[in-house]
Every structure is written in structure tokens, then in C-alpha cells.
Image (cartoon, rainbow, N blue to C red; front, top):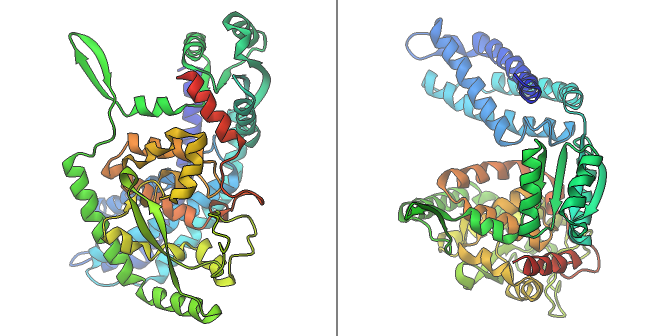
Amino acid sequence: MNKKQKKELAMLGLNIVVIILNTLWFVFIWQNYYSSSVYYIPFYGRGNYAIYGIFAVVYYSFAKLYGGFGLKNTRATEIAYSHTIAIVMTGITMYFIIWLLTRYMPAILPIVYGMALWIVTAVAWAKPANLMMRRIYPPTPTVIVYDNPAAFKKGMYITKVADWRYNVVGTIDVKEGDDKVFAFIHEKKAEAVMLCGIHSSPRNTILKYCIAEGMEVYIRPNIGDYIVNSSEQLVLANLPIMLCNRSSQAPLYAFVKRAFDIFFALVILVIFSPVLLIVGAIIKMYDGGPALYSQDRLTKNGKIFKIYKFRSMRVDAEKDGVARLAQQDDDRITPIGKFIRATRIDELPQMINILRGEMSVVGPRPERPEITAQYERNMPEFSLRLQVKAGLTGYAQVHGRYNTSPYDKLQMDLMYIANQSIATDFKIILETVKVVFMPESTEGIAEGEITAADQDVKTDSKTEEKNS
């Protein structure tokens, strides 16, 4: 067993600890409150072990989904938050499983007490586990190889935010040439290299060198990488071929996705109908303006449709006719608007758009035509996200923020388009539960900006043109 495998085994052990501790708490809850209520004959021996195993698997699955085991990549506070969301989802799932086993609605308080115990245990575990991780994985000596100032800036930003993972020992411009880059990496005794904004030829040369030397390589991808990633791999005339096409959903996937969209929208409208009525009435009473507003947005193949949302801003929010994204501390947002934006309640009327087939539950967020036009002036490839139907949630909404740059959102949307599947859609829907309660995910753009299209976007796009 090599050094890397030993570290990974130690990390696995850290994660198993919290699973075992919370499974033991579940054993206590099950034995004292639920086991004797199993329909017909109470579980004995293997039956009890099976329910313990189900809990461990469900908890592990949700914790994995929400990033609860990402000790190497996230801070202790986010690990604790991820486990909290995972525990809530696990508690709900286990309650319904117990319901099926007992054949009647079981007492809910024991499972609530159990969730409280699990959360306390996970939160208490997160900090020491994170500290132990940093001893197992000290910051990796890292060299940043870049091609332009914007790429350099983003590389430094990544390593600064994740300072527990990277120790930047040097930076070098790729224009220095391969030999100087290799010598610099060797001189700095780097164990990892981050490649930022480098076009394909020197990037491939450096990549092969680093892999041969046993180094980790982090690559800031470009748009072309995502297009290639979605390609179909073939062997023709005994030669490997990659076939790249515009995205086209398989008929079965398209049918299942549409059926799920209709089912999801109907269920949400029925369940949240009281919320829809109350919120609509409050907005109307606040200033006498309409509760709903509609706005032109773009969906698949650039088709324009009217999106519906609860109004969260003043009636005259865009009285000058200029399209603007919400800014940080935007005074156009009403008090009720702040609440419904933070909780995503303002998005509920979009179930109508989903029922009408204009949107899907999962897909790139629909942009306004005039804002899209602004983006495309600096970034013509922005239209590639219109290969699929716009969505209520999506990869960019889960992993980005409201003020994430358009170029980065485009990359995340293309990641989704390259990996569309029922499993991917379901995973994104579950991940959305986590970000709903994260205020930074709705953080506005900087004051004075009309859109999030900053200078970095222009530089990224120009670099991409040069690299293609």
C-alpha cells in the first residue's frame, strides 16, 4: 500500500466514524420506540440488522450527495451544514420506511429526537475531523502556470479560498516555454500544478509531463473541453473517433423527463397552493401592484416565452427600460420580496411554465433576451446553453451563485448538457434542497453593474478564441 492509498484509507476511516456513531443512535431509537410495532411479528436478529444497514446506507448516500464527506475540499462549517441537510433527508426517509413496516402512522417525536441527536453528533464530529484531515493532507506545494492576467487571477482566487489544500510555491507564464516551465516546476519541488487559461498544445505537453512525474494536475477547462466531453466515442476502421454533435435527447429520456416535469409541477402546485394564495395576497396588499409579473425569457433553440414569478421588486423597478440583474442590497426589492427571494418562493409560479412545456424542472436557467445579447457580444458561445430546455434548477444554480460570471455559468450548464440523464436530473433536484437555505446563492451582482458580465468574461472569451 503506497502513501496515497494510506491517506485515502485514513480519510475513509474519518467518514466511517460519523456513520457508525449516528447508526448507533438510530439503533437506540429503533429498539426503544419502533421495533415492537413492526406489523404482525417484531423484528429479531437479522431483521433488526437489516434496518440498521438501511439507515447507514441512506445516511451515507445523502451525506455523499450533499458533500458531507468532502473534508479535503470544504471547511468544517460547510461539512456540518451538509450533514445537517443529509440528516433531515435521512430522518424523513426512515420515517416513511418505518411507516411501511408498521402499517400505520408511527409516532414522529422519536425520529425528531433522533435527528437532533444525529445533527449534534455530526456537528461535533466535523471540526476535529477537518483538523485531522489537514494533518493527513497538509497543503500541497502547487505551481500555477497561466496564460493571461484573468486566468492568473482566477487561479490565485481558487488557491486562496482553498488555502488549506494548496500552498502556492510559485507562478509562471506559459509563454516562458516548456523547458523553463518544467525546470521551474522541478525547482519549486511542486507536487501539484494548476493550469489556467492555457491553449491545447502547451497544456497537453505540460499535462503529460506532470502525469509522468506523478504530480496532480488541476485544469481550468474551456468551452471546447465540454463539447468534446459530450462526444460519442467510436472505433471506425480500427481507429478511435470522437463524434461531436449538438445535444439531442434520447426518446426514452425525453419522455420520462417530460412526464416527471408534469408530475412534479402538479404536485408542487397542489401542496403549496395555500402558500401561493397567502404570498400573492401579501404582495398585493403591500403596494397595490400585481402579485405576479411576466417577463420574456429564452428557452431551447432561442425560443422566447413568458416566465411567471411572484413580484419581489417595486412596480417601477425598471422604469428606464434597462434590463438589470438584482444587485447586493438592491433598494428595488420590497420587504416581502427579500423573503420570497431568499426562500425561492418567488419561483413557484414557474410550475405553470413547466406544465406548458416551456421549461423543465432541470436545465439551464432562462435568461432575458436583452441580457443574453449583451453576453453574446463578448461571448458568442453563450448560445450553446440553448441546446436544451430552460430549467427551474440546474447544475449552475446548485454549484454557482446568482452573481457567478456568465462564462462560468455557461461552463456549468455545458457540464450538465454533456451528462444529461435521469440520474443526473434527480441528483440535481436533491442537491437543490441544500442550496435553498444558503443565502450566498442568491447574492446579487456588484453595485453599478447591469449584468454579471465583467472584464473577466471578455478576457476568457478572447482567450478561448485564441486557443481554438
